[in-house]
Picture 1 (cartoon, rainbow, N blue to C red):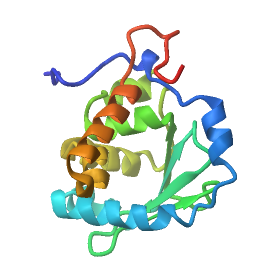
Picture 2 (picture 1 turned 60 degrees about the vertical axis):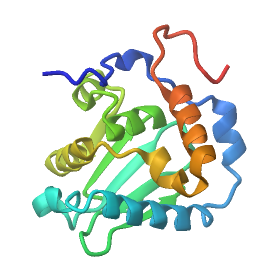
Picture 3 (picture 1 turned 135 degrees about the vertical axis):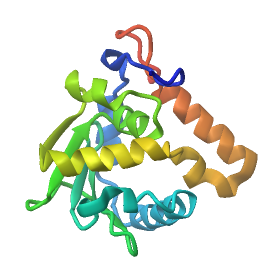
Length: 182
């Protein structure tokens, strides 16, 4: 049964404009590290069984590569001490990598986009240990993580407004030619 909140139109997944990636490229990645640590801590608090759902894959290293950003993420979902870090390029030796536009990755994680449809339509793709990547996708998909709310909750109503506006701009559009960033 399909969730009525889930959108199944992967062909219309918005992509950040190239000027945005070019503008972010020279920025240092160090300021992202505390935000990633905070996000993992809050995800762990809100979804305490998330990492346990990975089973045998909790010690694996995952690459998350938003193809429309000038950086990627390495995730180590260890239950007791999960780690995530921003990197310019995914390093060799990862167990699995998931690549695709930021809006597709977020939509899949928040449960608003059908992960299977994104993979089968090649909006997102997997390299490496497919079983580990699917375990991660299933665990995250089941948790329905609201990244905007998790990151911006300390800002109260303003944070909710910003999260809602970002979600609106990253939402798949009915027309492929129209992008919310124009």
